[in-house]
Amino acid sequence: MKQPSLWILCLCLCGCFGAGSLAPQDHFYRLPRIASAVPQANPLHLQRVAVAGFVADDLHRDRALLFSDSAAPLQLRRYHYHHWAATPSQLLQEHLISYLRHTQFAPQVVRDDEQQSQAMIRGRIQRLERILQPNQTSILVQVELSLSYKIADDIQTVRREYTRESVVADSLLDTSVQAYGLALEDIYRQFVIESTHQLLSGPAIVGTTHQSPAAPRRVSPSATSDPHQ
Image (tube, rainbow, N blue to C red; front, side, top):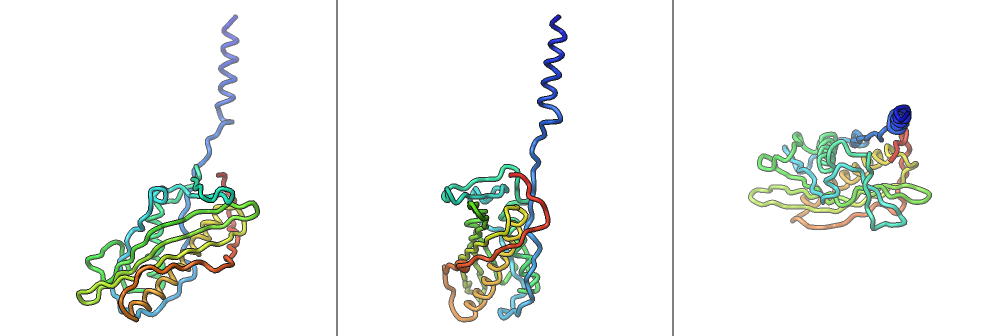
């Protein structure tokens, strides 16, 4: 008499933990292709420039996308199922290399090869996160960039810190990733102009901070659907 009850129990357990209980899927994001770069002059006459992998703290070396809530702005949180396709350090290195090649900053733009290059660009990721607010979502990018340039036996270094914040048009993560790409391109453009001007003008300087404009630009939504958090 007990055997039918056991079978019923097994069937119930299969129904609870079977096909109806699907695990959430992971989603992976890459930075968008360079969109707005145009060829620029090479007043430093550089032939070979190396770009190092970006330095970051432990949290920004992890591949999980990060966000904060305006109700608790000092608390930084990870998405459980949304990840960068590589570490942010690698993604920003490759993204910056692509930008410099598009703008023809130098005939050769390579990875990490400091010994054989006239100039070395280094970066540090300070903030790379979404900010969730009751009525809107924005992205925040804060990076430090430096350019070390060999002149005879001397090395001059220009270092700048940049911050960009942009309101995005919707809550889709795809839209936020597009906004990261645009913000980074704007930072690269300003860094190239300022570092080149400084090296042509005189000795190296250290440490200037540039904030984004007071009215952040709005990023239009992408065509893809919003994945679950």
